[in-house]
Image (cartoon, rainbow, N blue to C red; front, side, top):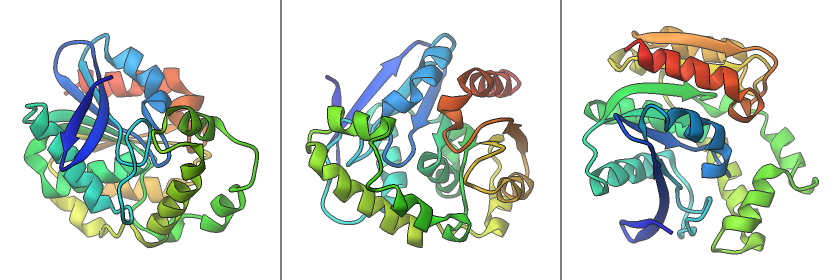
Length: 241
């Protein structure tokens, strides 16, 4: 399996297709498997890069808490290690937040940005609801973690707690700062997303070069629930650049 060393972390990644580079940044407690419908659709037109961050997918966890700055640094390190100067970035949830921060901190590394189900601060999240699911029956992401993680299934509880701690404190993105983003951006979410629709609309309005797409009948896992609509929206956006 392909791994690349990023600051001492053996990071699993996949590459598919050919053409301009598209970098997929997965959500929290997710993996490349969450992206499969997008990988297949995008690889027909682009060179798709899909790394898995520490503690998720096939990449082992590292000591210490998760931070969005570490996710940004990990993303830049992947681009450097694979010789990519700039790419179309498609991020989901934590990956979308990482994409927004990347656009603010490293604008030259993005050709465009697709931000799916992002939030700018923790106040819009219902963390009590997510914590209540900890002892519920395993979902698709639990099963994927148990199957893929080199740390073993039991470590999933540790990763979930690290993510819960992260989501309680971060991100802290000033909406006014998004006015500096010159990157063409598609802001996308489901109309039943756990991120309130008005918050998603505010993100799109704060970005000077943004389009907004709200997918009907979909929740936070819109990329899995409505893959045909999501893929069409992404491809139409990229084709129009």
